[in-house]
Amino acid sequence: MREIIKRGVFALALVVAISMIAGCGPNLIRKQIESSVARKLPDLIGPAKSYQVRAYGSTLRMMRGKLARLDITGHDVKLSNGLTVSRLFVRIDNISFNTDTKQIKSVDKTEYSASLSKKELNQYLKKRYSNIPGLQLTLGKGMIGFTTRPGLLGLKFGVRGTAELLIRNEKILALNLQKLRIAGIPAPAFARRLLDSRLDTIFDAEDLGFGATIKSVDIKPGLLTLNGDLDLMKIIKQNQKT
Image 1 (cartoon, helix red, strand yellow):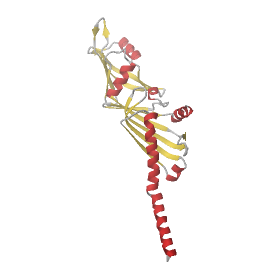
Image 2: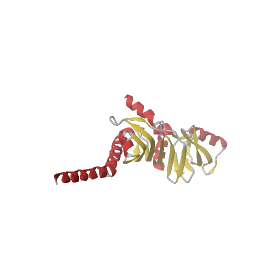
Image 3: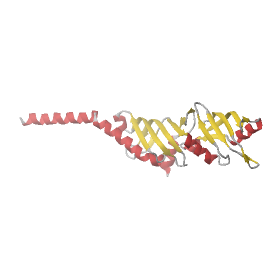
Image 4: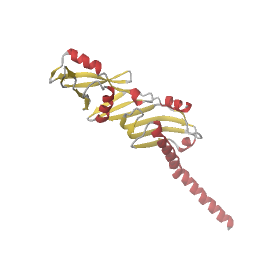
């Protein structure tokens, strides 16, 4: 009778163990990885209103220090240079990490998407182009509008125009002027050349950090979204040396 009871207890324990591995166990490991990464993000990237982290891959591979993919989403992220990003999404593929030290050993491709609101973009431009008075950008569907009020001989006059965006060397977001009017009349060629030379870079990927490149840009009313790659391993190796 005692032997039967022992077998019954053993069978029950085995069922409980299997159910933990198949159910709560994997979820617990995944959540531990996600929460561990989330805690480090304010120091690695910058403080934010919120961060969400999602880990993908098999539980067994996670226990061996392998992740198929890691998604990071941050809202109102404040980067170290003072730039605020409304929404930052980062996707990291094929991550290998040391299970003891929790340090990343290698990653494959790292893609990002960073959205700037009109307000954030204009604050950024105000610092970059403090010598262009009254510079303001508006974001329409696929097009940028801008206004400024330069002065000449004590008089200020309104300059208004529209422009397309160009990506140069996967680093610089530049303006391609389409229409330009000064005090309501079409601007002469020399005025276009002058503004073109002074108002060149709308955004520099270096200001995002992490070896960022710009592959594409999307403009919607009130929102500018940059898409590209990050050199995450370069930053990780630098941090591990210090």
